[in-house]
Length: 388
Ligand SMILES: *Cc1c(COP(=O)(O)O)cnc(C)c1O
Image 1 (cartoon, rainbow, N blue to C red):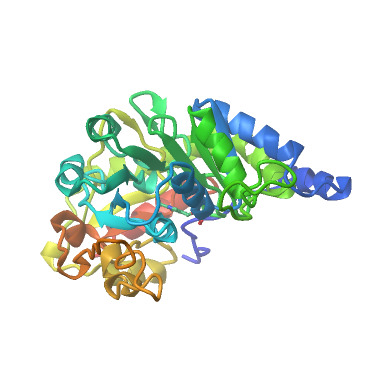
Image 2 (image 1 turned 30 degrees about the vertical axis):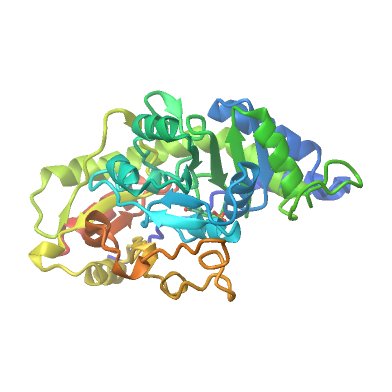
């Protein structure tokens, strides 16, 4: 069968996005203005929060969120080790220290019981990551945060529209943030946003994203240039209208695979279990490779590629095994570890969190994006079932 190569993710943009961006370009109003305001308002409404501040990437969104909450030098922030690197690079950019908690073996998201185990008197925040379109166990995480007076920043960069007990993620923690990178549920090319019911934090975030300027002349805090531009916002306004339909398709495609595959007794993979409390939006359609039966995830990925099916295989290793982390060298002068009055050097080298060690690199994501047709889906199913 001469089948076209099936990509795991594609940005879905067309004439409407092009027209919206063209209109902005011809208007001459290119920097943050009306389109950005509209995008912030409609996105906040979609998520179900009071207010939102748009920025130029998801990474910038997290950086601004941490700064707006006053998380700074020497503070500890509890994070999962199975996520994109920017979840922790933003913590280091604030000269704060990421402390890793293990993940839950079914949801792949941060484990509330291990969060409890990692709290010290320096802990200031928790960043649950809603990985692959799932949701972390937010009730329990908010309870822990209340007990210990911590802030919760939800990393929703893979979970636009995901719901936890009927509420959208990004509306439950103290602050939420999203990414609009090209392969996410919706895109602005590059972009990000932070969401909150606390309008003071959002006001602070708007100041931080724009040079720390409170008005035309007064720099009141350390800021950045993280503003979203009008072209990106115009595209975001169009994409947001399409998001629910995109998600509907992602979910249908993923459930088609997972229901069918769940019925099979294949030796090389198993289908993850999902909580009924969560509306999963399947950024990934995840399968776990049964490495204990001798299967090697890299081989699975390569064999599927040979059959014309691209799959995701991230994140290969827990973040605490990255060179920059093991070398304790995010900054060359020892910050954030040894430039505080009392040095606080985490022992990343001997970290061994059991669930993440077993799962990292052994979860694959099947193509499930909205552009796939029934023929593609069936082809992917055949390739998966006929692999070994
Ligand atoms: C994509 C992503 C980010 C960062 O977003 P960018 O827009 O690429 O900066 C952060 N966290 C997670 C989990 C992501 O997937």
